[in-house]
Structures are given as C-alpha cells and as structure tokens.
Length: 299
Length: 253
Image (cartoon, rainbow over the protein chains, first blue to last red):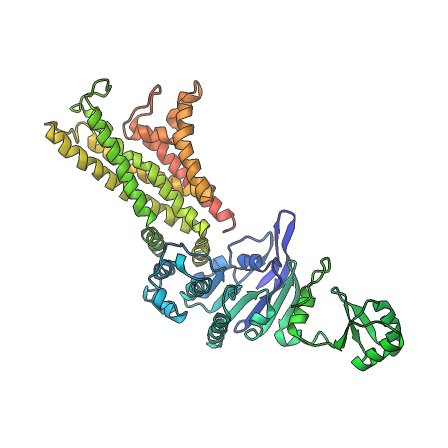
C-alpha cells in the first residue's frame, strides 16, 4: 500500500522512507507513539496530503484515481469533522448527496452506530463518544470495502471501546473487508487486529502478524545499579546481558535462579529480578522507545 | 458533478448563518433605498429630483450593497470547511479537488443570485409604492432602472464567487472576512483619494461593481457599465482560478 513514503515539514522528517502493505481481508493495527507520523501517513494514503517523495496505492492505484473513492474506502481522521450547527442527519445527508447514495442510507448508518435518537440534534451538543460514532457513520455511508480509522478509540469510554471492537469485528468478518486502524496504545487494538505495522519517528520498526510480536522478549529481567558487575558474573555462565534504555537489563541464556545466585555470589545489589514476560505492550514500548529520551516506565 | 452540487447546496441550506446574512443584506438594501428617497428634496440635498431616471437608478442600485454580504457568505462557505475540518470527508469523497471547488463556486454564484433577487425585490418593494404615492412613474426600461436592478444581481453573484477565492487564499475564517471587508471599506476608498494612484481606482473590484450598476464615484471617472462588468467578471475568474489551483496544490487541513 505505501512505498517509500516521505513527508518533510520544514526540518522535520515526519514520515521517513516508510513502506508497508496491508493485506486485503485483514484487520491491521497501525501503531506508534504520538507524533510518530501515523496521521500524516494516513493523510498521504488518502490523498489529503501530498508526499514529499514516495507513493501510496489502494487496490493498486493512488487514492485520487480510484473510480469511486468514497464507496471504496471509508475513513475517519479525528472525529472533529462536523459543522457544529448542523444536525447529525443533515451532516450525513450532505455526504449522501456527494456520494450519490440514497438519503435513506443516512438513517441506516445512524442506526448502525446507535445515534438514531440524536439524529435531529446539532452536533455541537454531542459528546466525544457520539462524535466518534458519527464520524464512523460518515465513513460507512458509502458501504466501503476498506475502512481506515485514525485513533477511533480516542474519547471513547470502555463501553464505547467494546462497542467499537464489536463493530469492527463485524465489519471485517463480513466478506473479507479490510481495516487499517491506528492507535498509540497497543492494548486498545490488541483484541481486534490480525497484523501490526509499528512505526516510530516516521520509520517502520516492525510489520507482521500480531502473534510474532510477543516472541521478542524472553529471558530474565533485572534491575541493578551495577549492571557491569552482574554482566561480569554472568558471562562465565554463557549468558548475555543487555542494558535497556529504562535502566533495566535483560539476561538471555540463564534462568532466573542462575541470575539470582550469580548476583548473590558477586555481591551485586538487585532491585528487581523476574522472568521476562512476553507482554505485547512491553515489546511495543521497547520497539518504539526513543533512544535519545529517558524511557518512561510503563504504567 | 450533480451529486457534488447537491451536496454543496445542502451545506448552504442546513446552516442558519446563510439566512441571517440574507436578512442583513435585505436590511442594508432597505436602509439605502429609504435613506435616498427620504432625504431627496430635503434642503442641502445634492441629489436630482426623484422623477429623474438617474436618481431612480441610484436608488435601485442600493440593492448592490448586498455584495458586502455575498462576499462574506462566499468566504464562510469555504473557510467553514477548513475551520471545522469538513474539508476532510468532502475531499475524501471527491479527491479531484478542482471539481469540489468548481461546485462550490457554482453554488456560491447561485446563492449570490438568490441574495441579489431578494435584495432587488426588497428595493422594488419599497421604491414602487413610495414613488407611486408621490405620483412619480418609474422609468423601468427607458430610464434603465430595471437594468440597475439586474446588474446589482450580477454584482452580488460575482462577489460571492470572489469570496470563495478569498477563502481559499486566506483559509482562516476571521482573517479572510476581516481582510475582505478592510479592503472594500478602507483600502479601496484610500486608493480613491490618493493622487496618481487613484488612476487605477476604476479598475478595482469595488469601483468596477459601482460602474456596472451605473453608479458614480467622487473625484474619479468610473468605467462604462459594460466595462465595469467585464473587469468585475475578470476578478471573479481570476479568484476562481487562484482558488482552484491553490486547493489542488495545498494539503487539506
């Protein structure tokens, strides 16, 4: 889908030589910390922003050359695209006209996202969650085969997130439709996505099935003020110590008991000693950690 | 394209602001007509008697003052999209941005014609019974009064299109409205009184609009009505082309 996409804003390379593809019929999570270039990438994909270099295609052609873009792709880029004084139904009817679909479609999608009771009210009184729903309804108007959603869970309460998951699962499970969903929190989309594309600082750091992501971290995690001493004590055992950016270290090639014993013998002070979990979130944080900045401890 | 036109028309009719601006335009027209008729013949008034065709034309062309409202409506139609980011779904559904801007300009011109017709009717509705009560017949055809009313409609429609162009250039809604009004109210009148520079005055949009409706300006000879019409049309086309090109080249906010 994207090939060597680059977008430069002044001195900042917001998206830097990014290439990835999304398989038809899958749900793909597009992940990265805030400011990683997710929105900019999606905007280029959708023809709203012109890349400085590189290309992107949907179904083999650039977005603007799709025969019926609004009926092929439904997209939500932040749930703020409403005129405050216009009612939800009128908002949708404007785009029914542009899409050349019957006005009845507006009521169908309102029903789909559960906004029928609020259809006649101006959007200015809508909560963030209602706006997300209306934005999603707008994206669904043209009954697209592909959905592209930028941080759709923002502003949704836990109930709303559960609703969104169910809706996306329903959408994707239906005749192999494709979803690309961006988020800065892996756990938000963990239960929904098949594949992940992870970017940090505009560059690709990982792409592949979600299941592969957990295989990265194994071994033992220790936190110690003197990692060098520990490393010296463990090297004879054939273990390898890697110091991470947040001050902790991972030990590979030794069991948690071996590490504890070696530390006790070498009089190395330990603040934490545990089996490395293969939490997706931790792997995600490790992949996207900024080596120049002090890493935040996942809370 | 018909879908886009319908979408743009719905955008206009589903916001209250357009109706408010129309009321404003009617009020401004009515004020101009009433002021001119009521002050006519009062001591110190320089206007020719009401029975003279040129006075009647001046009164009828009060309707053209609605162009102040139509340019603002044009600006608002486009800047609202950028301000509230409705530009996103709009350009997602039709990524050929030139077509969206073209549709918007057509609708702006239609809205301008509606404003023009309503304001022209407002002017006529006040002027016809009032002058009849004074026993004065209106020189509709031979005196060119009808022509003044019709050219007012053209002026108002063209300014609505110019408004779209201004809004594309200056995407910030408030900045765009303020700069357009500052230009028409402050800069153009200043150019009118500065020696040498004022030679260019007849070719400015406000002056061209005045010329088209058969009006006059103090200290400067305006173009003939048809020349004024052409100059104004040229501004409309220039702003339309600018707006079209800029929309295609720039990223959508």
